[in-house]
Image 1 (cartoon, one colour):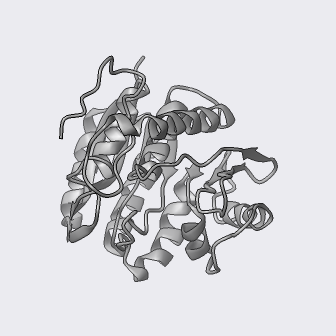
Image 2 (cartoon, rainbow, N blue to C red):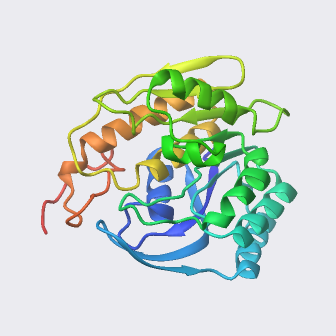
Length: 276
C-alpha cells in the first residue's frame, strides 16, 4: 500500500523548499503527498522578500478536513512561523495522533532570512517537540532550541543530541537526527540518537551552491520512509543517501541564480533539460 504522507509547512514559489519540495521528495520515494499550507512566502533562490501568515482558523480547518477523510501514515512539520500557528498544529496533531511525526524546526532560510518569529521558539519547544517521533535540527537550530551556541565539532554535537533527546517525550521510541552540515571542513557527519544509542552517519561536502531546501527534503524523505515501514536507523541512512544523490545531481537543473534546488527526481527522470 502506498502511504499517505502529510506535510504542514510554508509555500516557496520557486519550488526548491517548503511544501513543493516536500511533495516532490514524498513522491520520489513512493508516498502520496498531502499538504496543509501553514505560511505563504514570496521567495526565490536568492531571498525571501515577503512572508504572509495564513489564518489560524483556516489552518485548523485544513487539518480537520483532511483527517476526516484521509488516513495519514506520517506527518512532516516544516515552517510554521508564528506561535499561534504552532499552537493550532499542536492541538490538531494531539487530537489525530499520526503514527510518525517528523519535525524540521525551520527557523532561517538558506538566504539568511528569518522564518520563525523569535517569540515562537518557546512554543515550538513546549508544544511540538513532545509530539515528535523524530526531529531534524541543524546545528544553529539545535543551539536555539537549547539556548546555547551551535555545536562546532562532533563532541559538542553528541552533547547537544543528548540534551535535545531529553526535550522529547519518553513515550515510545523517539529520535534526534542532528544534522552536521554546518560543521567546518569537508566532513558532514550527522548524528542519530534515541536516548540510548548514538549513531554517526558520515558524509562528505559536495561542491555546489544548489542546497536550497535540503532540510525540507531530508525531513520529508524521513517521514515517507518511516511511513513505508523502515526502522528509524534504516530510514535515516536511506534518507541521507537520497539527499546526497539529489544534491550531487542538482547541476542537471537550471533554477534561479542563487542557491538552486536539489534534484528530487534524479533517479526517476530519464532525461533532463538545461534550458534557461
